[in-house]
Image 1 (cartoon, rainbow, N blue to C red):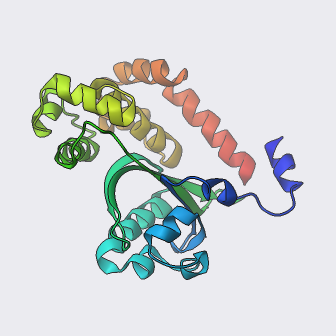
Image 2: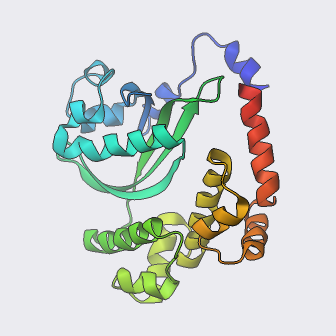
Image 3: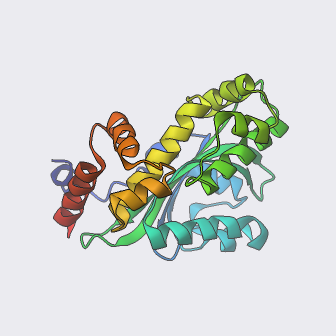
Length: 248
């Protein structure tokens, strides 16, 4: 239904005009080379340029310079190669207009009718939390980054709190401010999201995926996955493979 609706519109719908009205969100669409195709006015202002045409057709490195842009380019290349989305990544962003701030970045691959990744779409939403200082954000980000890099051997909430140099109560409070989840809920979401992407984008066995997602017991993984998604890992994989097949 949505495909038919969008095909009947006068021009391709990109959401550009909508995101032009939002000052605390950076919005963009990029092609398979990581070059900007669509940007909103917030990104224009933060890049210190006069017009969107100063950004379109360029990579983040070309727009922001090597120092600021390389991490974004690497992030893009990883997503474009693997097809695995980047979900609510807590990041400190620096822009050439001297804007600096913490944000949550999410990027999704854009696939063609053949199922192959053709580009990506993403947003970075500013975090404005009055009672958190920059240093506290940094400690939370360190803990989050550690968990993301160690999904197969996930830390406990107590270990995360220690990494963040906070009590468990303080970490839970700050995680809830940032992500809307307690630290324990966020850890579960991290592992299930990781497993979901492996189920869709790889041919690994469910047993192997359960280990990579930090579950020593496949049955425990299956129970948690069903509780979180309403489907077993096998059902989830089949449904998403069928959807992908419909686009080919």
